[in-house]
Structures are given as C-alpha cells and as structure tokens.
Length: 446
Length: 190
Image (cartoon, rainbow over all chains, first blue to last red; front, side):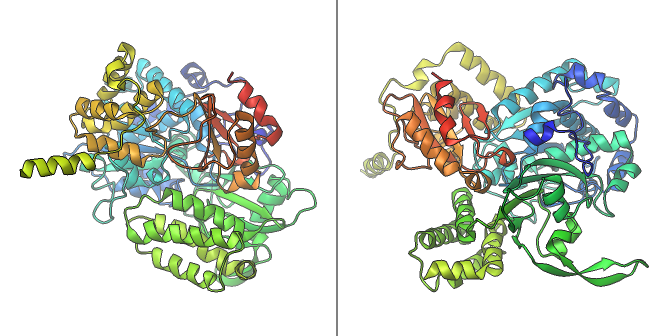
C-alpha cells in the first residue's frame, strides 16, 4: 500500500498502525518486545478485572467492525463468576466492500492483536479464544498462528500466563469465503462447524448465548488492538483524542477515484469529508469532480456531491443549534454521519467521480449481496436476487418504466424483515441510490 | 418392500458424484496430512464438530478439492453424519467438489476493484491463461485452462480496496494489477 509508506499526514495519528510500516519493524515477538510489547498485558494482569473493563468504558472505545457498539458496555454484559465457560472470538473476517485495514495489522503487527485479546481474556475470565480469519488472507493466518506459538513459548499465552495463575489458549480459525460470517452470530455458527446461518437476537446475544451457548465476546481485529493501546496511552488521554462518546482513533479506508487511496488512522471526528478527500487523499483524480461517496462500507447509505444536511450541532455557548452542513464539511464520526442519514460503519469510504454511472455501481453492489445472502430468511434470499436481476436488466438497456418503483418496493420489504442486519445492508444501497440519484434510474429504464 | 422403496429413493437422491473419477481421496491420505488433522482437532476441546472447516481446508489444500470419500472420511473422523460436512462444502464458496486449475486465480469483482478495472483484468487473465473470457465468472466450478494449469474466477471483495484492482493467485495477493501485467503475473507460476 503506497500511501502507508509515506510519512503520516498531519491529520493522521497512527496508534494501531504505529509500527506496521516502520522501517525494520518485523512481525516476530522479539521485535514486538523490544518496542515495549506485552508491557500492557503485564500491567493489566496486576489490575482487578473490573478496573480493566472500567478503563475500556472510560476510553469511550466503540467497536470498529461496523455497528459501533461501545466496547466496554459490551464487556460489562459478561458476569465473570456465573460459573459458565466464557469465550472470545476475534472477528477477522473483514469483507465489507470498501474496508481494508485488518490485513495490515495481521501481517505486520500480529502481537498487538494477541496482547489486546489476552488483556480482554483476563478481564472477562476467558480461557479459550479464537481468531476468525477469512481464508482469503492465507498468509495472515500463517503469521498469526506463528505469533501465537511465539507468545505461548514466552509465557504470554497458555497456562499461568506471566506467573499470574491465569490460563488462556488461543487459536486461529479460518473462514471459507462467506461474507455472512462477519455477522457475529453467523461467525459463531461457523466456529461451531455449521452452516453460518445468523442466530436471532434476542435471545442469542453472544454475550449471553454465544459460542457453544456460553457467554462470548466478539470484537473486531482493530478493536482489540485499540484495547492494548488504551492501556499504553491511558484511558483519559485515549478518550480525549476522539469526540465525546467516540474515543481514540479510527482507521478510515479510502478507495475509489481519489489520488491517494489507502487506510488512514485519524482521531475520531478529526477530519471532515472534504479534508479527507481533498487533503489527506490528495483530491479527485486529475480533471474529475466528486459525484458520490459511500462513507462507511458498501452497506452504508450513499451521499451525493453538493448535498446539504440540516442537523443539530453544538453552538458556541454549548447549546444545540440548527445548522446547515454541506457534504464536504461533514465531520467523519459516528454521530455526524448518523445525523446525515448514513453511518460511519467500518470506516470504508468509497469515492466516485463524475465519470461513474450510479446504476452500474448499484448493480455491482447488488451482485455482491445476491452472491452473499446466506439464504436463511425468505425476504433476503429471494429479494436480493430480484434486485440484482432488475438492475442487471436495466444496465443492459432492458429495464421497464416500473423498475425503479419495483426495486424500491422489494428493498423496502427486505429491510427489517430478516434475522440479521444483512437485510438492511442489502436494502440501504438500493434505497439510497434511488433517492439520491433518481434521474439516473429513470434514464436507464427507458 | 418398504425398505426397497426407500433404498431406491435414497439412491436417486444421492448427491451427484463429484469429480471422483480417479481413485478415492480417502484411500490416499499421507501421514503428514493425518498428523495435521490430528493437531487441528486438538484446537477444539469443547466440540470436535468445530474442526470441520479446518479439516476441509487441510483436505482441499492437499487434494485440490473435496470428493465424496473426503466428505465421508471427515464426517467419520469428527463423529458426524456426512450431510454435516457436505452442507458446508456446498455452502462455502471456497470449497470445491471438482478439480480446478493447479494455479487458482481469484480476481476481486466488487465495487472498488470494479471502479479500477477488475472486469478487464479478469478478461485479460482469462486470455493469458487460455480460457474463454465468456466462461461463467462466478461459482463453485471455475473455468479451467485446456492444459489444466490455471483456473480464473471472480470472487467478492478481497479487502484490499486501496490497491485495486487485486487478485489472489494461489496464496499470493497481487495489487494494482493492469490488464497488460496479467501475463507477467501468470508467468511467475510456471
């Protein structure tokens, strides 16, 4: 990744990406320890488990996988002394189109992840943890498995870690090419060796009835790395980097029609969309203008160049006031993107310029969702295929005048009617592309 | 009589024989594969069934695909019914029931790569490998070159959108691929 070989942009603050591109930094444990690695685990092992969870809460760490649930709150659901076995499953099934950060961590700094997970395991009384890595990252699985061996040999994993009396085992588990396994309950089914059909919530919240029907914490790769960093930097300092309720940094993955695509680690709320595109990523490709942005992975609702959002923002005297915010002034954090009707999701920003056909782009995403629907719920299994067939015929110039309305109708009838959020993920692009670019769909339907 | 009826029913509804024209895979398991399988099962102390994906991976990495005898063998090893394994092979896109090319080319099809020209890259890979670009792009059975060396297929997002277009050739990720560069990539695998 060319952008990562450049020195960090002034807007960036590399924390979880701190070592990943340092000249001479290697993924082995000696290099990690030489750079202060596993000091935070030792620190945590001297703390009370409740104190560890409180630190994570204080840091305002939100999950980095897409849903953005406060990590400390999730951990708080686990009752350490309920007599049941507890598990951790790290979600390294990164496959949301537009998101590309985990590979760099897994390849270049695997011990950071292992240390974060070991801290979590101690806090949550977990003796068995799995790292679920998609099989399209074969090298990552090898590197992480080797790192686990190294950590075990040095006493950071296994029996009686660092002489604390606490045991934790960790293993890599490889997926097999299914996007749905990134959904946490689907991931657990897959880890149990079954077809990965998502479980219905309630009652199957992983923290209550997770892996093997025991309390389980599922967090993203980046989230566990942040856990380690919270103990290095300090929760207060960490929280201060972000916005209230959304602490620390976030890896924004920018792809599409910009000059310097790449993953950029930026304090939460630290840039506007305009700064991210024009400043950090070097602007649009020569001679091109911005047309549309998908701000948080392919499932998030698309935004149109020139849009102005009416939202409430904090005024100079601390009161909430109405303000009109143009697209490029939109602050890239969870709250502001939610006010703009979309989401920060997994931080995958896909930028499209004025040469792009929105019907073609939507059809590409529809084909993705049609391929990846697990087939458990009828509205999704049938609906995503209909949507895909409709946009495919529209792209081929065989659409009918009713197609845009039918598309919307089908999407409206998938969202909210499925076991997992895949239904929404597949419907939101259709609904938002149609709402934001209606003229492109009318033309295509003629 | 009733028993015979069911036997007929079961025979006609058996899973189609999958590419197993050669010797049964289960008859040719080398000892190092067995050792890896035994090791993998120890990673799942709570439930052996959890080892089904790892065992399928080990099997496919060795044999190139999973035949009916493999499904039966893995099921028996994990004390499961064959359907518990077959349903995984048919669900997960990664697993194959038929032989693919010796070199597997998986081109990312999804939006960021498509914006960067992945459709052209896929066609160029096909041409360089001697595969008809009009062959089906997506599915459990990818098109294979006449010499059996390459298979080229589209896969969904490979999570490397910032260096699009990308392709996974066996275990290697190739980034920022151009149409003209595809032949040179394949030549590395000669």
